[in-house]
Image (cartoon, rainbow, N blue to C red; front, top):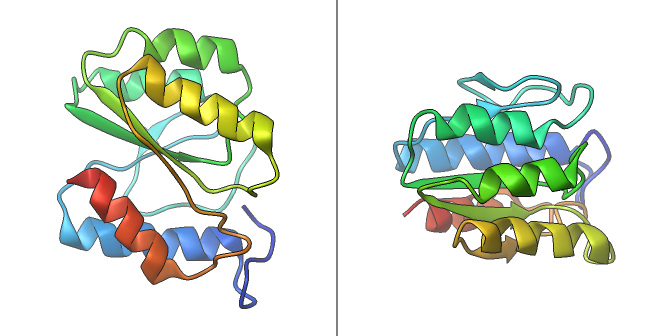
Length: 143
């Protein structure tokens, strides 16, 4: 996410702007994660690894109706993340923000959504760096 997006912005900055705009439109709890999940008020700088299983476990403790996962589709342990997703009472919608050429990541994100009865959207944040378009997609998934 630290790499460049279309238009010269960093991918993380496009995501940060889009999430902030969507949060202003909707009430949602933001959980960020790398090696450990935590509540946050904004998207932080990219950190270390991607423990999606721990993040899903953390989020499920609040018994959400819908959880939105925004990811490039490369968790540390895909099998563990899918196992946690299958225990969700609510849906998991996913927004894949990696490149359209990464078929393995897209496939994982589809499986993640399917495991919890959610929907999948894609937005190549590197090629389509427009934060407003991404914000619209995020807001649509949060409704």
